[in-house]
Length: 353
Ligand SMILES: NC(=O)c1ccc[n+]([C@@H]2O[C@H](COP(=O)([O-])OP(=O)(O)OC[C@H]3O[C@@H](n4cnc5c(N)ncnc54)[C@H](O)[C@@H]3O)[C@@H](O)[C@H]2O)c1
Image (tube, rainbow, N blue to C red; front, side, top):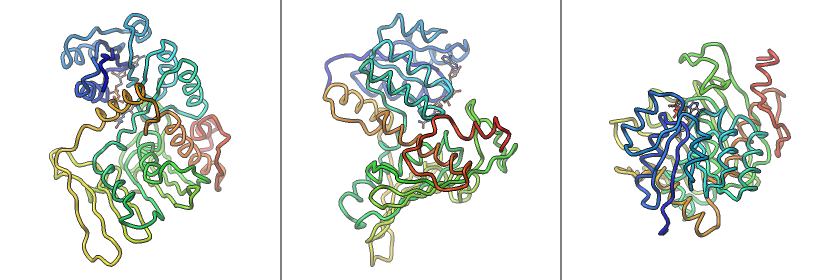
């Protein structure tokens, strides 16, 4: 691995920025040197947790002054496009943008263009592809332990952009990033949902429940459910990012995120003809964000590809937007999607929902 030290700056020093800082701390080739946040109390809490940083109110000033090799964009989604484009214009080696990549495909394409133009490697924070339980389940699938993949299912709480982006990204991961042919979806949005979400999440319009059915180019079927229609709550392992893989010769289930202080999560497999599940619990999983960053450095230095590259996150965004578009058209939507704004926002603004 690298003998270079990568200078890192973080834009937006809130919750997920702390996870990024802890991730960088585990990757010896990187050194977190600066953070930018207009909120003075966020700045001072961040500096106390991660001493020695130069803090800025204005992220553009940080970009101008710090000669950064890597930039993490950890703000709310409406700011991701503007900030990734501004960071790309300073030609760092890599950018880690938090999920969801952006609010619509138009913004996503502008981000990808800016990164191409300035030769910047862009990844998006769908770190679950590096979470050990999904990694092990995928390895078992690739070994053919459940035969050929037939169908994938995933669910979590939350809205499509905030949480569904992880769900679709995981389902595409298990389907080897095959292109998706069509999407059929529906959403439920009301002023106050059953579990009290307002209609805005992270500064953008959101729904309280969504469902999306789709088909990959190789015929594998996908189904994702989000928000208050999922089984969730009473069965903790089904809460957030529970996944099932149905094969011609068996089935794999991957637990959702473990509860803090609760039992470890893992995955289980039942091959054709077996009566019992074979359970694999994972006690101390490696840090997935550190893994995604280490892989970014490998990508920068050796080339090839990254599981979380910007074009993969574009494919995730396309499915999320197609679910909204399907709800708007009341029908199946064939991909590639030719809609570059956000259909949910358009429906809200038109008073249609
Ligand atoms: N990958 C994951 O599993 C995961 C988990 C949680 C959150 N996220 C994502 O991370 C993003 C941030 O979420 P969060 O929970 O950390 O939010 P947060 O509110 O805790 O932090 C956002 C920070 O951005 C700052 N900010 C606002 N405007 C800014 C500006 N102009 N310049 C610089 N900073 C600015 C705010 O002051 C705040 O400190 C969201 O897109 C969210 O979806 C990802």
